[in-house]
Image 1 (cartoon, rainbow, N blue to C red):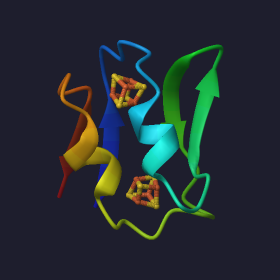
Image 2: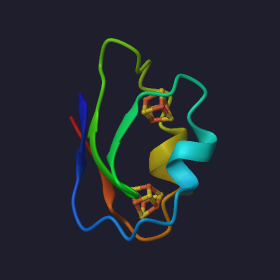
Image 3: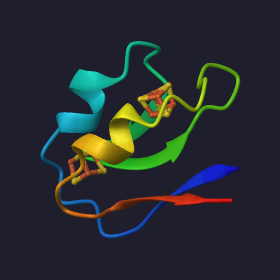
Length: 57
Ligand code: SF4
Ligand code: SF4
């Protein structure tokens, strides 16, 4: 399982909710997940109302 990031609107909500600081940003936009830190809790996917974080099985 992994999380694809497409069309980030730079709201910052996923960064605020991720307790593991696992979302890598370039400027204000989320660009990828650090799977060394991520525990696949899916809080970021739930909080992204822009649909930019997509869980792929
Ligand atoms: S919550 Fe979604 S739109 Fe907001 S910064 Fe994260 S990936 Fe981008
Ligand atoms: S799934 Fe959880 S740990 Fe992984 S990046 Fe999203 S909020 Fe952070």
